[in-house]
Amino acid sequence: MNDARQAKRTQAMPYATVLGNGDGALGVIHALVRAGITVRHVYTNPGDCAHRSRFIRHAISAPAPDQGTALRDCLIEIGDQRPGSFLIPCNDASVLYVSLHRDALLNCFAMTVPTVTVLNQIIDKSVLYRRAIELGVPVPKTWFPDSVENLRDVSRRVAYPCLLKPAVSHRFFAAYGKKLVVASDRDGLESAFTDAHARGIVTLVSEIVEGDDTCLFHYRSYLDGGGRVLAELCTRKIRQHPAGFGVASFSRTIPMIGAIRAHTLSLLRHAGYRGVSSAEFKRDARDGQFKLLEINARPVLPERLFAEAGVNFSQIGYRDAVQNRAAGRGRRRRSFDDSSPAKCPDR
Image (tube, rainbow, N blue to C red; front, side, top):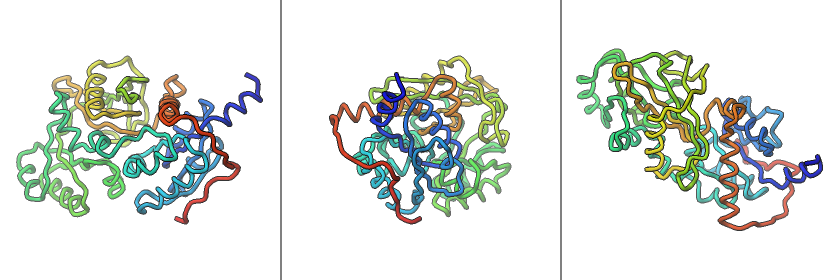
């Protein structure tokens, strides 16, 4: 294809609108541009690095998700400038926000973000773990205290050290700057729970699954609207930071592990989930079982590396969402001027 034809084809393709901050958003940007897709980046943190990427057509500052409907209105304004572009939120807060405002945003964006009902079955561990138990998916021994009084009963029965984990991660991380609390004794557990409970953050108590960081495995997949797997891969952590309960600093792709694939797909399909996800399991050193820790309903940090390895989840999501929108609503042509980015309300 000559340069003129390629330029015309690229101009005719719907944009991808990447929402969110950090390395995860930067990885998605790189993966989309690698596939020849024009990217707009909507960022809510001016100090973040992703919106400075030279690969972005437009970088647009927007209100944060915790500022009511301001971000929704900003996104609608952006979407109206180029209807049908692909909206891909890149962190937990953005995914949940888009899901909450999904009906309004579907008027101007193609997306795979599910309804709140579906999303909560995946990202809320208090729901996910209960469903996993019903479906025979191994999970760590877990308690679900709903009050300080109930927690005191749990604290007398649990083995220490244990974990206090948030049901939904992003609010806990925003409050404490970490993913969970390791409680070495009853007083520490009760203190951590009481503080989180006072902030309105739902938590659960979990045993620590034995094994070092190399016992952590991920199954990454993309499911279409019919529950079919369009792409998948399996990875294993070699190191993470901080050690024990952190983010992978070194992972490697490995042959598919049938057990974690089957467990994840049973949960995703039971929920009616569509789109990209990443399930984390830990192989218990005591019995060799792969035990579910969480499922992320969004792109993850190594997205760019996956694309370079030949599995471009962002491109697959773009094609699935844009093609389904075109098939469901028919092709529409609308004149617009994309020479300048949309302007959003002041933050």
